[in-house]
Image (cartoon, rainbow, N blue to C red; front, side, top):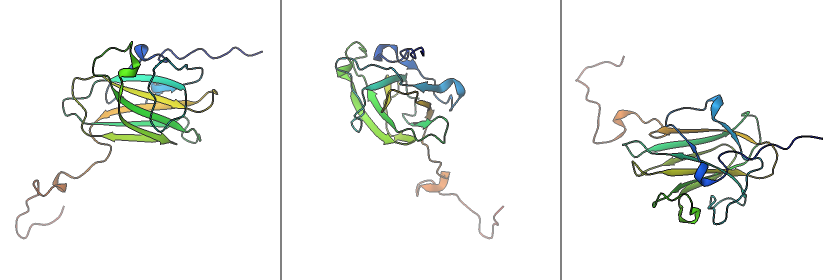
Length: 168
């Protein structure tokens, strides 16, 4: 006879795990939606059919740019993860139907590169999936874009080179 897994502490929206930007995919960032419940009026990613949702909350940096990644743990897992990014304009977590979906991605190892987000606002990340088995994932929310473009990628920001200069 096995002991059932506890309900995740960040299952209800009002108990969303506060996420620090740029914390990386750390061991402490491993989560699971096993035994999560669905709240009345709770939003879910528009690409999702799952009712097993856990929540993370963060405030965007002054740049208004974030990159979000949710990866299966371990990476070899075939976990399908549904991720929705939501804005709660009235800051009342007791009314989850007020959430406004900003982006959603469903698949195996998902990333959301969202521009722009509103600095100082509370954003909520819903992570859900299928099946009520132990499904582990790692969450990362970091400043800026997931892609690194060279500083001279824009016509307005060229790299000036002197005539007869050499590459180093």
